Image (cartoon, rainbow, N blue to C red):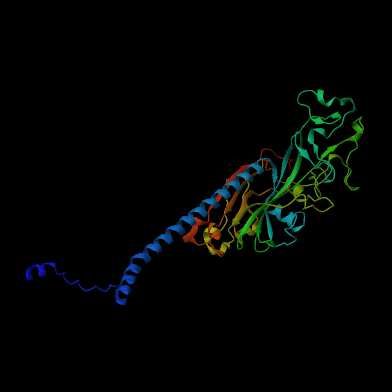
Amino acid sequence: MFSQLQLHRKKPSPPARKPKGFTLIELLVGIMISSVIIMPLLGLVDSLLRQDRQEQVKTRSEQEITAALDYIARDMQESVYIYDQAGVKTLWDNNRLPKIDNNVNAGTPVLVFWKRRFLSRDSEIDHDKNSATPKKQVGCLEKFPDAITDVNNEPPGSIDCGSYKGKNQDYSVFSLVVYYLINNNSDNSTGTWAPNAMRIARWEVSGGVSTDPASQNNPYTPLTRGTSDSVSYLALPDKGFQLFDLKNNTGTLAQKMDAWEKYSEDYNLDQNQIVTLVDYIDASPVSSSANLTPSCPATTSPNPTNQVVPASATTGTGSFYACIPQASRSASSNTPVSRPIAQVFIRGNSLIRMEDNATYSDSKKVYFPMSSVRVQGIGLIGGN
């Protein structure tokens, strides 16, 4: 009986265990061990992310500089005359080129050249420089009484000029083009441009399509632009434009081109705007490193000596300059006139996209990409 009772008696439950946790010392030791392992990993990740970001902005700067040089090269291929160092200085000092927001120190002209601008007969232009009147197709600039035709039955290739058939031809006019290097800190009232950097901008003023009404037996009324201009136009020049004069000025070609004056009226910078080509150009002074000093390829006799344009590039930033052969201004020179040629250099600052005050150092040279392009114009003008 006792044995059976013993067999059926429940064994007492073991005492409940109290839950164990980490002691403060264990937590501190764990944190220290984790810090030793994790902090270097975080530093490595941050370094990798920063390097990746630097490579991205470097690549972007290189692409923008390449695109800018390609644009300049295409533009200058149409050039017929490029001003050298003395020529640019003469035009600038005599206020023949527009200032950047009337601030002489904000922008410096670097490339100044004349080019031919092609006007396709199918293109539309503001022929009378009046925004209130409709634009015209270039091929419709001339009217001929004997060319009135049914619009729907015009011959193939004709320009649709309404009740008359256009002259149906292309035109070509001269343009003066200027590329500026602009200090963003001096001209950035809207906050659009990168602080502590520079940008390259372009400005162009074009001539008009002239006509001789006395030689035409038609009712076309020529356009005029003031009493001081005796030329009659099919399409007016831009305000301030005046063609260079190779006949009335004595001296060499360079001296004649140096003597160019703008028209009596001022430029219209609302229509002919100064348009930015590329931003994030390096503003580090040349004194930062000997590697920043602009230099031009050497020439062999009797080729003209290459000059850095502008002259201030050798003491300024040197981030946008051109090498232009020095023009002859000697009456006794027998140097033949050759097609205009230039080599253009641009240096960017990719780090300024990440750091507001990033400046050049030789150890970071790779992040200040420098590229150049050599261009030769397709034509030339005049002679000695």
